[in-house]
Image 1 (tube, helix red, strand yellow):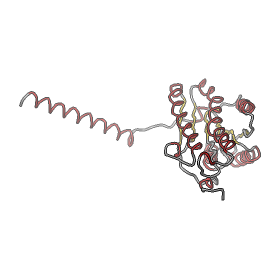
Image 2 (tube, rainbow, N blue to C red; image 1 turned 180 degrees about the vertical axis):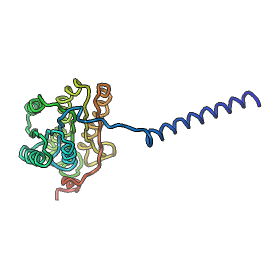
Image 3 (cartoon, rainbow, N blue to C red; image 1 turned 30 degrees about the vertical axis):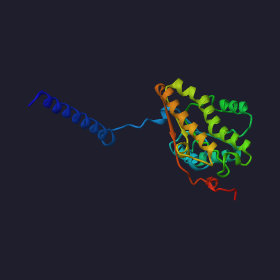
Image 4 (cartoon, rainbow, N blue to C red; image 1 turned 135 degrees about the vertical axis):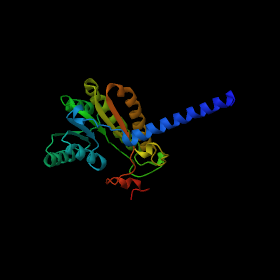
Length: 243
């Protein structure tokens, strides 16, 4: 057997072993490795859920309440949030705090949030705002476009960013915390007639990815969810006209 043939066999054997090793590791990690979920209460006793009056946000609240977390409800309606907070307190025996952020004055809204969370140990942030068009439309044909676009950017981009800015420092100081930002499948697929909404959700996805890189090394877990359309009572927007 020539030297060249021997080297060929050795090379083939080497790559076969590498392929086997890679496959073995993947099978082991998926099916056999025991992983231990972190105790989320170690991050803090309070959870802030923004955009929580119905649908996915409410499901988050109820799941956290079952686990006996104290809850900060952030949204655009004081009465609705207060009623929901009282319902959760009665059903699950947890502490709650409702924070209305429907005001148009940004600085006052930020101050209100800062005051609300100042003395609370918050371990989990969930940003679930999802302002959208009243119905699909071309960019230049959106009704009341100035207000509509401002509201989408305010709820989907500005507020989640500022909530992270306000709450994350205490997580960094403690060396741990969880941030869950809710984007959308519209962030990653072509979405004509929902241009500003889909762009705002693309921001959430990119923001989450880079935030994870920056603060993962400081003990924070940053995740982004990209759900499709949900039957939450707001799905009427998909109709191509106001009726």
